[in-house]
Amino acid sequence: MIPEVVREKPNPWRIAQSQFDRAAAYIPDLKAGIKAMLRQPKRELTVYMPVKMDDGSVEVFTGYRVHHNAVLGPTKGGIRFHPDADLDEVRALAMWMTWKCAVVGLPYGGAKGGIVVDPNRLSLGELERLTRRYATEISIIMSPEGDIPAPDVNTNAQIMAWIMDTYSMHRGFTTPAVVTGKPIDIGGSRGREAATGRGVVISMVEALRMMGETRNPEQISVVVQGFGNVGSHAARLAAERGFRIVGISDVSGGYYNPNGLDFAAMRDYVQRHPKRILEGWNGPCEKLSNREFLELPCDVLIPAALEGQFQADNAPRIRAKLIVEGANGPTTPEADDIFHDRGIIVIPDILANAGGVTVSYFEWVQDLQQFFWQEDEINKRLEQIMIESFAAVAQIAKENRVNMRLAAYIRAIGRVARAAMIRGIYP
Image 1 (tube, helix red, strand yellow):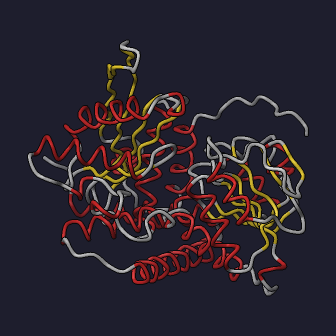
Image 2 (image 1 turned 135 degrees about the vertical axis):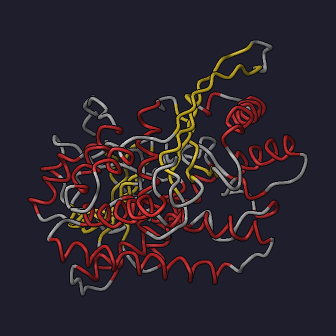
């Protein structure tokens, strides 16, 4: 296994703004003032949170919540717990959420949150106290009508339950619609956990159809980077459709078998592993570094980890024919240009991984109505929205002779800009 090369992490906020600028140039009626407004966040909150640790000491953590835009409706976006979280990352993720909601037609603006922490070093009690303190601090800008958080990297349904309960205690009554991604027992939606991965697979299938792919699914090789919520469900659902999963990776490294991996056995192993990772897996496969893993020969590559995976240094060596972005911001603009020149199709994050926020929208609607849907109805509605949105973006790409990322941004920015111009600038 070749050791990893240390790379400088690209600034996600500069990437997000660069992507916006590229697409804005294709919208001739985008007024300069509206462009300037959409290029910046609406609101940023930084909080410093003292938390009592199990040993009696007090540790101060840093947290963020950023609202990028609220023209189309309440802001919507996840909360991540990660030691590398910073304000520029959260700004970028909030902007991407604005475009993600707009490209699939949801009545939401974009937001994101984060805490600078490695949750794996916290006990369950410390994690709960940190979560509740963060919920208290951001409650001044959070509400079912104004800003609705959700899970993201290293957060889950239990953390959303603590946030909902904390907010409800402040209000004096239960307010399930203040977060999405909750357990079903307290107002969560069926189908939410797998929704992002399901949307990725739907996008993959539509992209293969667009490319004129006629082979049977078992002849199409798929590599999935990341085995968390998005990657594991994307791999599972792709395998259920008959696609051949030849590569899976997580923080412990990459695992490759050109004849296909035993996905079910790997999933069961992770569920039994104390750290919920593939470390120690000894099934029939080759162990690879992340750099080698991304450069594997395959038909489809699904990056479902963190941003900045494809940069100018490794984009020339990527051998996939189709990249479907399960993660947010995995491709820098420089890598995008290289992929375009090489004829590699990229289905952008704001379209491909919009399944999660779409079913979050369904959850929010169900909570507000106190009327819940069956999972088959949710999955059917999700598939309809994803397929229609994909077709609309593909049509824009064809008409403007641009790649799918630019087309998705043109559709999203145009929708938000039109709403902003109709509403006008207050006062």
